[in-house]
Length: 250
Image 1 (cartoon, rainbow, N blue to C red):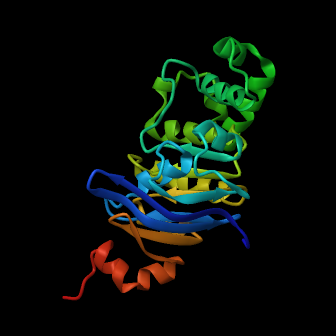
Image 2: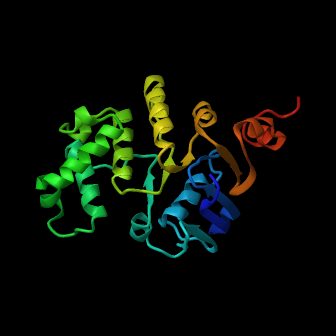
């Protein structure tokens, strides 16, 4: 973990008079899982939406894997190795689990015509899709319609779809949101494995998961970074305890 894979400098985004991200700078090192935490409204999702290209910053720059991607489209960023999952799942509920992943494989390969026909019939697309499903523990659910999956399984499927783009880095927006205790434990175990293979920027409210998984943690409050450090450093930071963990002096 020596060189930043992602380097963000001075990122600012305003919505009218609201500053969602304010002159925010952040490095994510090659090979680390970097967690982004903060109270609701801190600007976490806005920040990763800018990195993914879904929102364009008002000012600041984004460098990823040696290239400035500040004005690139989302598909161009995906092709360059960025993948994102969402707090609310973005899936095709009436298609099978394997169909969803095969479509993502098809998109990565740049085929745009007869999209559904190719993805649902071409063996090479489906074989690769099955490999990604095996990686996230859904190998035996490939032929199930997505709407029949549990919420936790849908979160696993989103990870398989992200993996199908062959990412250098994954942006994960609250993968534990809405999961029960057992499902959270499964997701944590899965992310422990994936972090050994892929650089991850993780937005998450589950602090137990963050402290178990993260190599470094950045804390946002009101769109600004107030601290970056290890789990131990963040736990010991007075500003973090007051602003986020709710532990002021009594």
